Length: 459
Image (tube, rainbow, N blue to C red):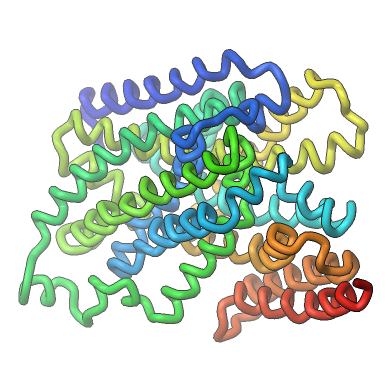
């Protein structure tokens, strides 16, 4: 893939504009709470910008086009499922979460199930989010390596520098402002790319000849079970992800939190469609291309240089913003719920430094892991991460939100540990006919039931 000077110029200008906005917003961050929650003063657009800017990353753009190249429209489940999850969050969870006045998911579970539940939640949720960070880093390293003609190690270094500029200094404020700007760029550029790709696709009998076997234009073309499993993974995983809940906590009030979730859904759902169109186009006309580079190659070679450059900049920002947002979520949990407590860090300046250092370490580890697993399918890793973080946490979290302290703590803790272990076992070692997420949720429900019964007897 060769880029002209116009491509590179517009790509760099787009990246600089968005990163500049985030750095400008970082000027007011002086405390750990300001870094992690933006002072709890975010309006609906900032909440939505943080959420959409994180979820629309390499998986939603490059990963969707990559999967559409292989299976068609069913690749849309990532952004469609994300949008549905945010609607559910806005309808049922957002107001209650914001009204709690907390900062992290582990804090909520500590209030309901004790200190040990907080540690388990921090570790399990961080592992799941880290998988998402790696799945976002994979296309970032691959694209930068191809575009700049550098090694994966050098590409990882460039990506690390961009993430540092995006979120290291300003935290939630940078993520919110950068997310709004990034989504504006992506919406316009990807919509144009999708329209061009759709217009060039064959129709009727010609389409059937190019895409034999049917199912290419069906949401369930990859199987009804797979489609529903992907939806469930997104729904459960997103509701248990610290970064998105952290954006809800940053809202100025409960009503704003709900509105931000709804607005994020409206932004996120359509983004996958132009990526699907590009994947189908490349399958039809360039079937020998590397699946991971389907989207960037299309943007570079099939659009006017200025538009292709802007779109490539938007894709790079989607990866940078998503990785930064996920690292912020992991960093907040590890720094606040584990390290600050373990080392008795009370000073605000030291808390802020600790947060920034942990965020940086998370990004470095994600880049190193991605380099070691460059051949992995991006969306498969993302769905796996959603299942892992949701299998053990979703039901205890939901009970804590809607029926506080209704489960005996020892049963909640046992449920989180065992169901997570089962989900990991069936995701990595065994290959059951049922999605590991459903197995984890079933085990969690079985172990929570005695706790519910014991709690009622005490009452």
